[in-house]
Amino acid sequence: MGKEKINQYFNNIQANDQHLFVPYIVAGDGENGVQNLPERIQFLQDSGAAAIELGIPFSDPVADGPTIQEGSIRALEQGTTLKKVLDVLAEDKETRTIPIVLMTYVNPIFVFGIERFAAECERVGVDGIIIPDIPLEEEDLIAEALTTHNIAFIRLAALTSTPERLQEIARRSEGFLYAVAVKGTTGVRTSHEDNISTYLTTLKKHASVPVLAGFGVSNPQQAHELGAHCDGVIVGSKIVDLLHQGKKAKVRTLIEESINKQEVGT
Image (cartoon, rainbow, N blue to C red; front, side, top):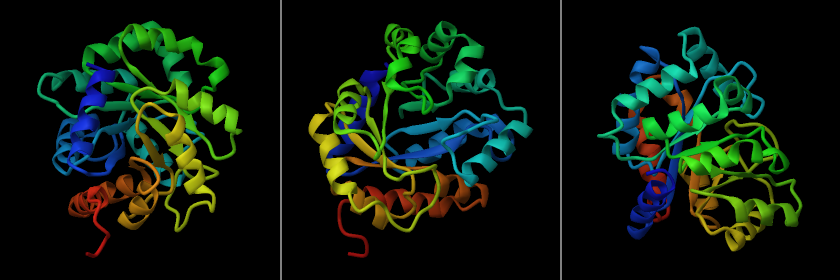
């Protein structure tokens, strides 16, 4: 269903007056490599996730901080490839209900073949794509193929962009708009930029899709603070770290406390 599945799933959650929470996991990280994907996806869905951002491990992840880089290394050492991830996703396509968003860099897509990549994503039930290293000026290289196969092209907005560029990114976004909430790579942080509320409010004004804040979000308090100015959050490094430590109960608690719009602790 692609774009429509993301829209429908998000609308259902927001109709229940909840924040959207998208966890990021590295495909192939953990015991049994890519074979643990269906179980992890089901667990995150049952915990209240709005979608799952599934990172394809890559040898040069320029947007990722140490935690996700280490997860990528572990996954690559287990032989994880883009093709293997897609094949595993195909296995439970008919029973999986939560939207799947792949996060990958442009190089693996080119190596795989742009048209083949988009077609395979549609075949296995991928609903959206995030490509952090392709700018607006170059995205025509892949946008047409994604549109043909009804895959949402999820754009990233940066704090350092001009107002005009942010408006254009917001206008083009499909599925949801990924608002990068820090200046730098992914990773746990204790605070965000002073102008974050203005930034998120501006994106909300121009976007026709939900705006989710990501990078540096690691606890329910941060999720609530950011969620007051947008539709929810994306959490990566903290999720990757907790799953690596086998602390699934803490992952569930993080999601449940973050999506509840009541103040933390009340």
